[in-house]
Image (cartoon, rainbow, N blue to C red):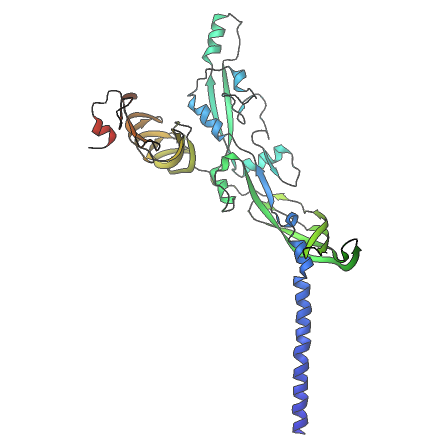
Amino acid sequence: MRTKWLLLCVLLSSLLPNSANAQSSDTLRNVRGGADEAAALAYSEFTKPKVLHIDRDGFLQARRLEALNGVSSYNVASDLNPSGGPNDFRPCFERGPIAPDGDAIDARFVGYSFDPGVIYKWLSSNNFIQFETYNIRYPKTEAINASGSFGKGFKAAAVFVCAILNDNVGKYLPPNQARDVHNGLDIPIGRRALTKWTFRNRYDTPVPGKGNVKVFAGTFTYRIDPIVPIVAFPGEGTATVKLYLNPDNGRWTIDNWQMQDPGITLLTNPLPVNCKVFTIIQDNSRLVSPYKGGCKDGLADGHGSYTLSVYRGGVQKTLNVDGEFRNGKLNGKVSMTGADSEEGEYRENNPVNSIKREFNTDNGHMWASEWRNGVLFATCTSDGQFERNCTDREKLLGTH
């Protein structure tokens, strides 16, 4: 009796694992699918993220307007010349009686249709864009009005507005994308993920010259998972796919694909706003790291620093600026280091008493200049060329 009981237990134990394994295997197939399903879900149209595209902003043109210091040698009409000439300030715009409401900066959600004004207001509510305003006078036009030679009443002043992206937008960019947010960018905002297959069909069909070819056809639903906290994707999308196993290379190839994404909801989650700083205007300078330091009324105030990319002598250089700020500009002691250097005192972003040293990477020579009371006082060079009032060479070149 005992022997029969043991044999029965052994028999049952041999049957149960097989049954459990069969169920586990079926479940696995339902979850993972076959190579055909995997190939369908790996299709580039499905895997590429949803994107918010933003065109270049008005940062570089704002720097040009700032460099005018309120006075232009051109007429207003040429300032708005669309030919791309030296005084073309687009995408900055001249302020008129009607606000641009959507034309200030070009942005779009790829695959979705929004009125530009809706996106513009959404960008503003999330602190994506900030505005800089520049009042420009036109003395030539003023002189024409005064003389009356060509009549009077010509517009001799204009206000330009530049929409500029908040540097903090960079936190939404993937690690492999450049962090310069001012030259146009694509922000991944969502990724598709399978919810479930709603239909599957596998069959063979004859193809001339290839014999019987395996075909997979199916439909499935999917969701879009947000990547950033500024959008949501309610509901589900649907996709229909047909692919075949290419006997020439053994790869599943898409024959037909149709996809309908779910809708999108724009959320409000404002970015922090950096303290505004007006960078020194020299050698096509460009801000490459945001200002860090004291702030008052939204402008740099007290001790602070930022990093510039400057173009000198045909070479792009990095300049670290550290100093005292007031009303967003350098006012007080300043120290600049990097490929070149400068030490001294600035007032309203202009050198008052300072010594600047620039290094020529082509020939290894140094160019040093000294400013006194806001005027260039002396210039010394390591090769003795093109000098001016160079009475203390060691001091200026930093060799004493």
